[in-house]
Amino acid sequence: MPFALPVTATLALLLTLAPAAPAPVTTTTPTPTATTAANPTTASVIFIHPDGASAATWDAIRTFNVGPDGTLHWDRLPHIALYRGAMSDCLTATSNGGATTHATGIKVASDAFGRTAAGDTGKPILTADGKPASVASQALAAGLPVGLVQSGIAAEPGTACFLAPSPARNDYDGISATLLDSGAHVLLSGGERHFLPAGVKGVHGPGARKDGRDLVAEARAKGYAVVRTRQEIAALPPSATRVLGLFATSSTFNDKPEADLTAANLPLYNPDAPTLAEMTDLALTVLQRSGPRFLLVIEEEGTDNFGNTNNAAGVLQAGKRADDAIAVARAHLANHPATLILTTADSDAGGLRLSGIPLIPGKPVPATLPQRDDNGAPIDGVAGARSAPFLAAPDATGRRFPFFVTWASQHDVTGGILVRAEGAHADRVKGSMDNTDIAKLIRFALLGPAAPPAIQP
View 1 (cartoon, rainbow, N blue to C red):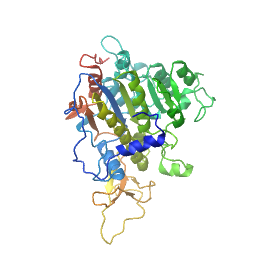
View 2: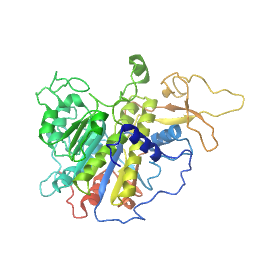
View 3: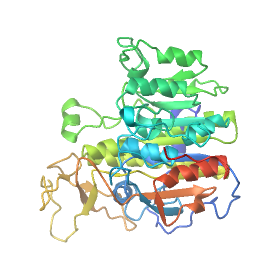
View 4: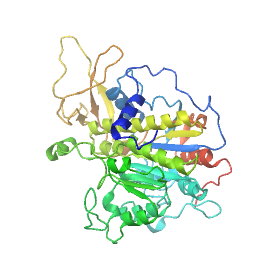
């Protein structure tokens, strides 16, 4: 599925992969799966992290995009487990603490970023022989290509914690430099400003680095092809094995409340930036040029950031984008059975919940929703507070039901997270899984049972 196709062709391909709507969730799961395909000792791993997306979030994403009887690609991942995400110092995970645990298999403090904790108290997470224990670092040490795909800035923890441990989560310049120095084969994200010196003009805006380093020039010197637009992606030579993609000055989305976006005339997502699915397609194409086995870590950050700003429309669009990326991964799996697709979140951003509005004969659907529910919870419609209800995609009978979204918080909350998987070793996803089990499964599938685990510092 070469990414060098024109963008229109890529989008047409994604449409052919999109869930058929409406279709019951009980339809036969496409092959191959871990129970029907060869289950090799080692396999490529595609880890997809729709940050902040709980089962309730996915229910709203399904209802809005394919209808209550429809089937997302997330629904079609046949193996499922409940996720337990506590940190070493808090019952609710942070994005950086959760990502560090996903990368290493060690339960860390909630302020950790690739280490056990922030600041001077944080320690490197190593194996018994003193080597970095992140599954991405272990893959690179074993000669396997690694890619990171991120809809936010490159320094977002959901991907960056795998290769750029840092004493401080907000050291975006330092984390971006560490990512480039890591040896990763593919780095695709926003955050161009953290790769250019302050005042230097980029494709999307001025640089912001205070240390004077031009990471774009350094990337080219290291042999990376640098792309910042769809046109540059289409012009990539078929021999490119290292690619740095920077598709926005900051994130590829605008994570603000609905009223702020309306006032500034801003879209939810930058239409000029490649989607998560397009970046996933590019990453898979490039990684395969360096060998048959690889690790690809993908994060849709919009599901988290829009959830934390209580922007329901943003979460619903971000979730569809995450599901489109899962579709691209499943298309790869169909042609490469020695692949594990694994997906989970680490917490529930904002506690989004869908509330249906009954269709009662003779009673009109309210044109405008109240600002708050009876218990004081904020209510969101299509344009935020005090706007019209959302309409679900048609159900099996063609009806479109109205609904609204209520919020529990503007922070991350715990519970309702699922782990889902398909492909090689996916049958190990079952029952209940701790957050430390994510890295253990990635390590086992990618490097085999003899791969050294992390040692608790």
